Image 1 (tube, rainbow, N blue to C red):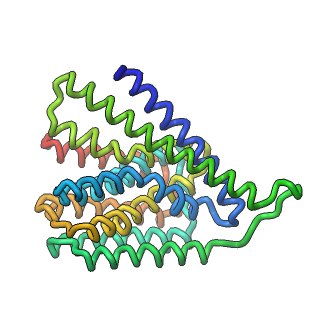
Image 2 (tube, rainbow, N blue to C red):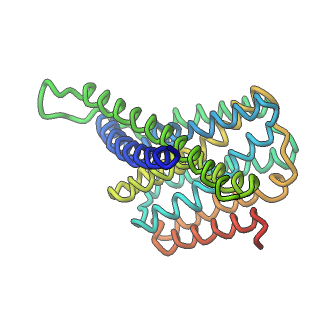
Amino acid sequence: MTWLLLASGLVLLLAGGEALVRGAVLAATRLGVSPLVIGLTLVGFGTSTPELVASLQAAAAGAPGLALGNVVGSNIANVLLILGLAAVIAPVAVSRGAFLRDGAAVVGASLALAALALHGTVGRLAGAALLVALALYTLNTLRSERTGWQEVATEEDTPQGRLWRGLGLAALGIAGVVVGAEFLVRSALVLARGFGVSETVIGLTLVAVGTSLPELATSVVAALRRQSALALGNVLGSNLFNILGIAGVTAMVTPLPVPPEIAGRDVWVMLAAALALAAAGVTGWRIDRREGAAFLAAYAGVMALQLGLV
């Protein structure tokens, strides 16, 4: 039964990622916006659903530190693991103007979270400010990128009709990757315990990476389909939503004390990853395979550090 759940999770991840990419590209075409913007909003925010649920559950269970750790760990994995893997599969082209706006937003949000970590607590007022920043950023991005409905060939196949088909397909894809990730993590936990792997190792590896599986599946499928802008937008949008949306909402529910290990190490690793992404993006306006491999190597080093192997 466990192996069947594992296989089902993998199938749902791949099929959901494919549906999400197809639907997102179709919706972008009908809305007259770039795949990068759809990746930033629909795809990036949608694939962050597991992080949102996990953080709210942690806060409700009286473990707000876990909620913040989930945000920080997911952002590190998004850049170093997910974007690194996508770039190794296919170099990621970077739009100069859009990246100067969106890459700067990710670095700015990371700096804001680092400042709050130094303060020691992410309170309700800070949470509200993060949510306002997310709303303003999203509205500005959509307003600046939208060029209007695209023309279609037939009267029956209206732009609105194709838009709703694209959004519906994307919604099914999001559901598929989220459910698939849940199946995969559950089965992997059972198998890991069966092989005698400790709870600490499971928490630092399977659980930490598990909530990023939707982004991983979507970005890999996007890279395989040569939709590099969608893969990049997925990572940028997810990281922004994690900090501004998830940390903001969770802090509104209950103030988030910052654990010493996050304030002393992990939030700075997250900031370094954001700065590395910005540097890679502006050098040649593409993230090539060598840079992707460097991201993956850095992620392996981060995991080794967290597991106490170095």
